[in-house]
Length: 565
Image (cartoon, rainbow, N blue to C red; front, top):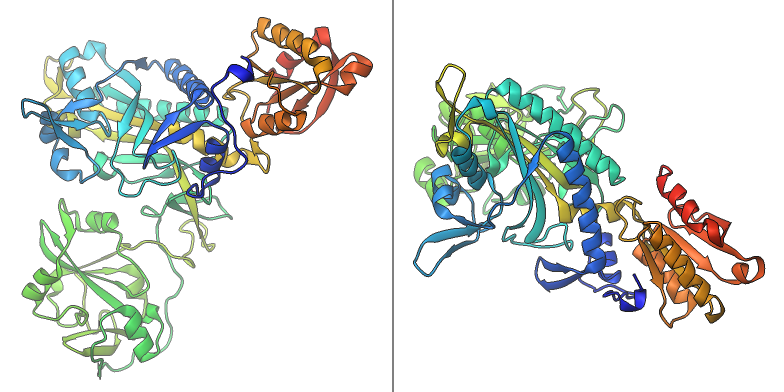
């Protein structure tokens, strides 16, 4: 491909709105163009990278026996209503009507459609297990699209689905998919982590995420740098060694007029926030529940749901709390509350002499102690981790780091098949629900993630397997232009994806653009060629140079491509 004819425009500076490195470099290198918040076009250079990533995914999916298909982007709402996700998904789910008034959604994911397809295609155990996948556009109306394609509203995703006879069979495929994902990310030269994850709105029995660490990430993980323990923030086990010594002091009331927040309270009483308690109320299928955590901690609702074994859980409104408890918000505390409705975090149970609401307006209690002044119904780890928490495996202090999710795999069980009536006949002729798994990779996000870990001050450094071109031919003067064209044609004939920079611009501009675009090998015809009849090769990643004869250029580039990164 001739650079002069290629649809790419590079720039020295990115838009001010581009916060993260990958977004800046993708704009500067002409990989993408923004049309609206979280909606991008992929220009030829960017699309070539997407295509190569997709090819790697396809190879690894084929290796484990997955079959590729394509599902509709616009999905009937009827399926979503049957699964229950029409109501459970919020505003991120784009709902629309056709001219006849029928409800549809823009696919944010495809579990319902895929389950319906298999329901109609397979009715016997003889065709199981089966793994099917697609690479398809998705749309989620994110409230805050940011980071370029890292958190876009429209994005490209590989989603695979497995349908099995038993949990044992499903777990075998789950492990196969996990290994396939490791190979995909390794081939993209990503330093990734595998962490336990919540199933969220997807549902299911268990899940894992593949993440990379980067300052541009919106996700948070907890990591122990001593033993390697790593978990998503919402799944991390919270352990502290702050068990207090000393005597429990007598409870007493203090006047706190107008003091409602933890920050105001700690300032007013000159105490640390960790010495205060927050009482928060939740509506559940078990009734109204009071939850107690330290003032410097936050309730993890997923952990709380598991401790309660609750099917439904949501934060109670202030009006409902006032009505049920009869106390002004900001002055509620655990002392005197119905003990059958009190769930207390483990860290609270380790402490002594807390400050908490007195269940009277403008009054708080000091020196409140668990078990003496209040008794919990349940205790457990129901909070998010904070700096200073300890590793549950080795006891070392953990760190909280930013991360980007690359992909997630789910063991779904019978959730979708039962709600959509998807069954098969087993060996005994008995009707059974499919045991399902779901496995996603954010393909467009993966492109950005590779850049986040593969760049320098000059631009992108693409791994050879996904680079848009393997080599770029550069003539530094008109005297070597004809020979440069010859080198380009030889490389092209040898099957090497090559860009020939035939533009009428300075050699410096050509070198800068080649570095920005991240092409692995520069093939340079300059002074060395004129003096020695040698072509210079410079690697983008290591910056190493070597000289070869014009007839050996194709073979040498092939050898370099085959070499390990």
